[in-house]
Image 1 (cartoon, rainbow, N blue to C red):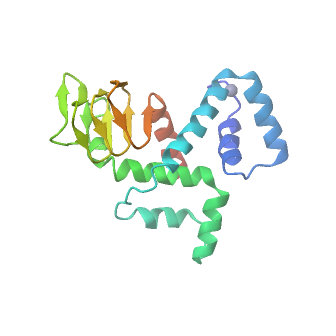
Image 2: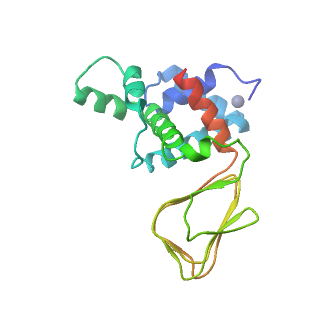
Image 3: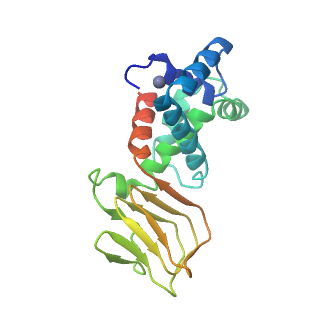
Amino acid sequence: MTSCPKQIVHYMHEYLDGDIQEKAKQELKFHIETCADCQKHFAELKKTIALVQSASHIEAPAGFTARVLSLLPKEGKKIGIERWFRNHPFLTAAALFLLLMSGGFASLASQENNHFAFTKNSELKVENETVIVPAGTVIEEDIIVKNGDIRIEGSVKGDVTVINGERFMASAGNVTGEIEEIDQLFGRIWYEIKSLFQ
Ligand SMILES: [Zn+2]
């Protein structure tokens, strides 16, 4: 992607925000058809948006709302903000992802990048770098595993998110929420989002 026109990634954001000029859209479309890297990148962006939009129940950390609001047009009224969010799904997704990172992921994000980390729950077992939901156990919260695997033999009443790892499901294993696996995608998207907020 280093040899690609610089504006292509920018066009992807505009496209995902539903705010792209017809000419730019054609250019993006043509480039994506001929460039496997950009095609992959675009698909990852779309996947991330779906992921972060499903994580909207996580509470915002202090100062987050002010930060997002400072990025918004100065319409002031709530209705204006809602419309703006609706018209800019990419930035909304980015905001939610940031929220996920700094809120729900706070303990994970503070660790080194390649460090094995997971949601602390006394019912979970850990073997090497695999988190195990033991058979017959019911975990009543969301589980996040970073740089490790998860083996689900019991039940999880919540979402399971695995970052840079794999998920193994035993036949009796059961997850009531969403299961997400984020691989190399994570770092790349985080980079995109950081640059978007700078
Ligand atoms: Zn390209």
